Image (cartoon, rainbow, N blue to C red; front, top):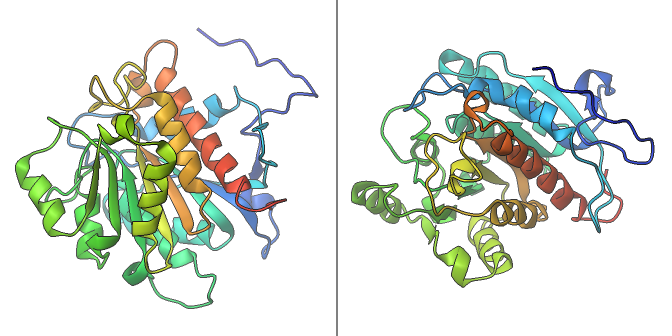
Length: 313
């Protein structure tokens, strides 16, 4: 069934109607750059996550641009990486690097969690406010919001954190938020600890304030002052709000906890990039609740960026 067109109100500007990167001048920068990285081919479970970037772009237009205390920044859409899996991973890395070189904050729309490897590497290469070249992985930081450690062997949506560690990321600057019982194994939990990763389990979100959790994560990931990548795996959420995430479980984070945590993290100027992963738009509930949550995560990240400084780009 075809959905009715959205009501047009000149006094209620809709989100998602951002610039095309093609409309930017060759040297022009924006506050936030959007890019689709629809990884899916190496997923450990069947997924249609490659359909999700387009679904998020459609869903985000259901919402407005007004967020209390945040002046809406400039946003440009850098399009999608055509084939980001396998040999195309290098293309994804380069595309994210190009977007990061022209944006203060890059938001990558996944795709399964395999995208985290290329998005983080690309953003760290593109985020060079000091004018230095190179990967910058040696002083970068990583924060994941995820029920899982993602430290498996091989190349899949279960391995991006391990791959980043092997590429040179210091585990002492990795923080994993929302790690869930019964969603991991002792082997991978031990691997995380031995790598020096800071683990914040699901229960901490009921025992501590979200501001404390975010502040502590930023302090650890940002120890060296380098760029921070935030991986937002929506399957950290309760299955009632994220049925389109194959690995979401009952008892996960609430939609509010996810949204608020992302906004708090995005406020920090060291956060150079955010990815949104593990939503399979082809398996969503009839009301589209998971894709809509992912769309709102995008908007929370933009609002968090806008709160960094007055009159952001």
